[in-house]
Image (cartoon, rainbow, N blue to C red; front, side):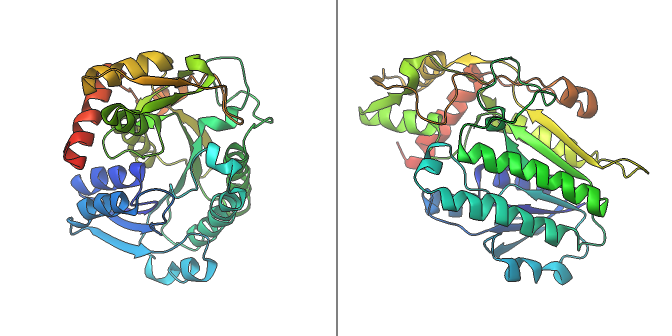
Length: 326
């Protein structure tokens, strides 16, 4: 297959690209290398991928309609599109809401418009988020649960993407699969996420911010398990059938909810140093618990996450120390 990946210099995008290239697929990457976090980390991820002959890259913003749509004639042999480019982060959406609408909504529609112009397309896969479940209290979270009450703008844009994808699938008979990712961590992860931030601060002897006074649980999912789920979806496109809208939604998580304080404890063990805690109230837009129901993902794609935080956190900390020369 030939796969177009947006967010190719991102955490999930670059790891997915490597996995596909290693097994012989061709990959076209798109990323604008913005400065939401350290651009050097994005460039380092991209450099790993660019070593492969089967990879080509376009430095573009997915919200740039003219530039993106001009690629249609050059990408006629692309069979799969994976839209991972997004403005991430719940807390930053309180500071810069316009970035979320531009990338996550306008950029999303732009990618759908490009995708429907690709003659060999088999499937459009896109990143949604566990954030769409909002303040739901029933756990584990199922794709059958109502999600009409998102509590952050980030979550609202991701839910909007799911509805827009349904519309395109209906109008153009275009197979669309949305993946609700649950708290991804691991080597080459984002600096604004807990594993990276906590490791950095513990090593520096600085306090770590612990929201809701530590009374949080998360379905932490290791990057290799996330990528295995995405590859499973890519290898099994939704079929076009008469009278059926070819669209699907799946959870990609570990299906094990862990206490935040246990997660921090694993980082402390891997770093070899105790943290200084800065206990804070719950942040606006945040939720106390996430927990993925992945039964449908297992049944349809053989998805079987296998990495616990006891294994995944030491892997991340080892990478962090090597990358930063600690």
